[in-house]
Length: 309
Length: 327
Image 1 (cartoon, each protein chain N blue to C red):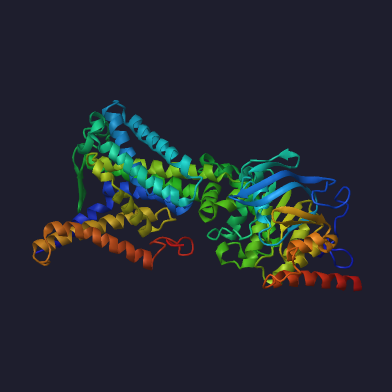
Image 2 (tube, each protein chain N blue to C red):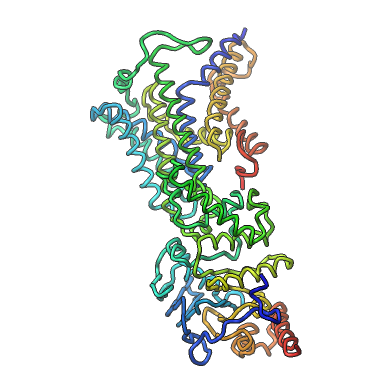
């Protein structure tokens, strides 16, 4: 796992992803997702209004922003779980605007959910097997006759067990997923997504509700995805994680992309501080959002720590 | 004095009665819908009515042979499933419940209305469609059996045919639920968005499930009318709820549960109604008239369902971990 880390223990960051100055909507050298004029309104509220966004291939991109910035909505739009009022977007050069979610997934863009969706009353192994694509035993007529799909099923099971071992869930394979802890469910959901052999993995808050003991292993798994040639896009609130593993950061606020860049530069961007603290943060609007303030302070401390090394 | 032997003998007859087989098959269809896929179908009575009327009308009005009439009934239930599913399966689960309960009532009222009397027989229903089925009977004339189970050749033929269908349907369901198809179906029950995110066409699978369970329901409707006439009042909403009771009794996410549930349901119902009727005659229940006694058995069924849901939500054969009635 630690092989993905550089000599000093920090993960190797991908650089040189963009063309020109980092700014919202900056062109990427090799984009995997290109989105244009995406707008999603809920009644009078514009949840997402993105002019142009490119996600770099083969890198780990973090999508951050305060609560209600439209990160998850954008996720839902890109994966076909929601339909925008307007806008077009492509995945791997092909348009997937308006393509239903299951077809998007079949093309190799697989996602996880903010509220983990482990299929509780299926066993861990069945959860995994469900992830495999193009199973002939999933057709109704062939399902009745096991000799059509038994071989395939064995291959899928072998692959599932292999992945479970990597995620240290192999001892739990016959348990119902409902019996797993929150962190283990996150791991299971990620492992299950990998069963479909995706090219782009989209993780919606992979760290939410994860026991700190599992955090490092989850981070390693995400870094491994990149090492294996997959592209990762994730939404996260945990700034340490963003700093630690992201190659590129996209900051959203009030539905728009307000900043882009590598993690260190972006955190120093005034637009980002505005987004988190509000542009009127020097005025007294009542109780400050202490969580965010702490997060930003921690980032500043991190930077200080790193410059000491 | 109460004739206990007769009471037990009547109850024992229900174990293999064609009505028990019909309810078992309808409950198996509902197990596919509700227990395995999580579809809240409250219109199983409608599917049964389509099987019953489909078979009878195809035989009487169109002069179809037995196999043609069976196919006609199956086709009718497939069309019904498509009509129900196309608008509702994309919506939240509860919409299907509302639509199915209303659609089954619409069907029953259409079969009852005088407008179509020449075809449906209106409130009197249909009879005289059994000729073709009788002709297929390989059993020579006579009376066979032992103990309480002594029947003539037609009655045995109906029982063998009915339970044969139940066994075939159970075998198919068992195979399906152990296959990758069944895995997708159970995944949809747990969380359809997660299954969609893995590249499965959830809508298509739900439609397949609705059709298979509906076809089982319509075959159940055909078994149901072999020992009796087709009467529209048999297909009221209460029929659907009795089938739910059977399903929950046996275990919603099991293959044998609905069959066992149906046997227990009918044996107990027969025993209760026989016992109460005779107890009233014998003067054991002086506060009750015999008409009131006829309704008491349904009160007891209601109490039994409540007891099951409270104390054994997974049913008799269900795995407590796999499915509880209230999630």
